[in-house]
Length: 287
Length: 267
Image 1 (tube, one colour):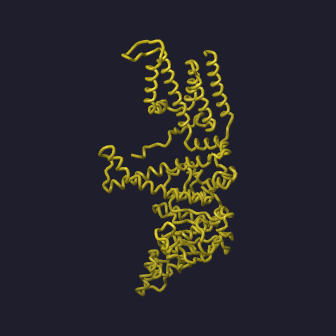
Image 2 (tube, helix red, strand yellow):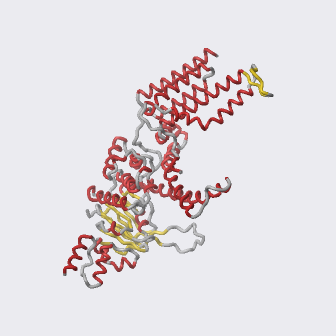
Image 3 (cartoon, chains in turn green, red):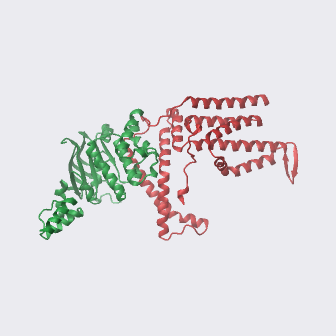
């Protein structure tokens, strides 16, 4: 549990400005000395508003981007080591926002097999791994469908299955639910939690939905290329003022509790789930 | 309105012809074309047509669908037959002004019409009974020896697959953009042809921009799944040739031989 799977040390990153008209224009630092360790089996959520650098740090986790300064290690391998690129990508899989743009094949099971085909897995073993992956996201019945017949949530689960088939240690999901309807969001999140609990896969979920982040073991809040908070959800959300300052909301429950504390009706701000909230409210009302 | 466009002309089914190995189907279609073009008498042509009818009956494709596939080539048929009827020298049957109709002309044009119709029907039978994706797969495998002369066979097949995969996505997108532009008052249905073509610009530009964005995202997603070109790739779906495939291939070769034999005897 305590073993590190991803370790970022002092990562700096900026996009090169060679296409800018003014070559001397100051480069915008996207990441400023970010250090972050992800432990095996952990479910981490990374929160931040647009442009906070949360997607950029995610792309460092499987060597799509390489740091301009500092180092990123995946399972002890330096991500700048090109020879081990495929080892890195096999142990840290990545799922993106738009399911349509990550499905390659015209048949569900062939898409799930895509990574395995690339890795040269023998066909009999591939069959087994594809079936397992489809079952673990609950899409086995749809294996012969074509992706465009599926809903957004189903397509995103296929994309997740395509990653799981590689049997990675860790999956990084970059706003996987941003384009989905509430039903699709729930089904994708349920799948993510199941993968974490039942299969022990390390999850890094990048999101701007507070209720999704609240389900994680740990929340990392990013703002302006830096990590501003890194703690368990209860502690992060109890810091309501700081969250509001960087333009993030807290879950409705926490917000309510926060307002009640401010009125002096409550002393505990560490409440993030609805049941605790109900209890606290009953207490206040009966007192 | 755009939803009605069907991709390819695959007609799903479970007939013997559907189940044939697509690689063999392509080769057999090639042999069938060879039959049609080597036949130089009506008798020989009949053999080819018998072969077509047998495979057509086995495929259980509705006859109406087959006729539909002929529609686009009607102009070609008329054009070639007119040329052949009027411009071939030989025994004159009757005259229409300066045009004369000869026996040879009539004969050749009838021959050509039958040949073209059989050709189109035969190749449509291939696309009706094979899904585009299996067809791409089979082409990749048939052409794979050409990798030795540096032909990017895998890359071509991958491009085909991705194109097929994105057709429905892009159609949906076009639909959305059209509605969005109509909502802003774009007029696409009236005016001259030129005006209507110009009205397409506000649809095509956003479509291209989004297609490029999609392409980039797809490339990153493919890299994340360790895509590194065709070398060392294995496939989930293995094409296995069965006895039936060889039998069908053998049968088509026998038919080709009969055609050639008839040619020798009549020629």
